[in-house]
Amino acid sequence: MELKQEMARSLLKTSSLSVRTKLLHQTGLSLYNTSHGFHEEEVKKKLEQFPGGSIDLQKEDSGIGILTLNNPSKMNAFSGVMILQLLEKVIELESWTEGKGLIVRGAKNTFSSGSDLNAVKALGTPEDGMTLCMFMQNTLTRFMRLPLISVALVQGWALGGGAEFTTACDFRLMTPESEIRFVHKEMGIIPSWGGATRLVEIIGSRQALKVLSGALKLDSKKALNIGMVDEVLQSSDETECLEEAQEWLKQFIKGPPEVIRALKKSVSSGKVQNDGKLLKRPYLNRKGSNA
Image (cartoon, rainbow, N blue to C red; front, side, top):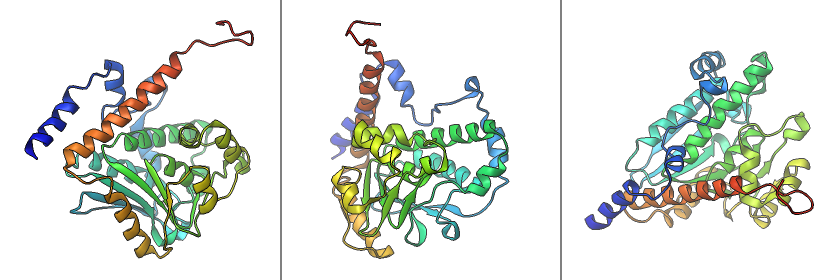
């Protein structure tokens, strides 16, 4: 067993990835910084003005963390303080060396309705809205890079930003009566937390276009059919479905943390390499020649 753990540690240290890819997947590295006009501390001061709800983290001895979006009076919408707390919990998880898996869920049988619109309206300017988007994209990018196998447990509704958050997880599970819906178009906006790009990776560009442009209501059956979710659970009870989700996740996290974490980092790095190849392909005009 000790030999396997040592091999896993070596894998993390001797990756053959390019320097660019290593930097891109360095834990804690952000997409946006001051060169993009993004000033994190200024954004934090503004977000602190909008309290309400909490992001709760429970770490189990099994190596599974349970991240709960807790603002039930507003369908677990993200207040400004919750957005800040999400980053804090991600940073805490980055240093949880015993961790192997993570379940994200909402309190009181609802996943999340996205941003608290009162807070969004109070931000004042389009520039403030843009910096908020940058902040959430930075946080969710760090979340995706966690060396933990993550599962979104969708109970009730996952709407707007809540639907986007589910795409940042490695897997998605739904209870029978739950629903995922990207409602952005009906609000006159587009997904701003990186959800559209991730949705394409999950279900393909044609299906993603249908889901986004139609603001389709994805019940558990339809979501399973198009590959949006990996399984529909038996129970809709809050306690029972969490237990089901834990049992489902356990099949993928058997073994020492070093091995599971190395596997997750290896897969994540491969994703970046493939994305890079797509970006490097030459553009072709209609006649098939390089433009």
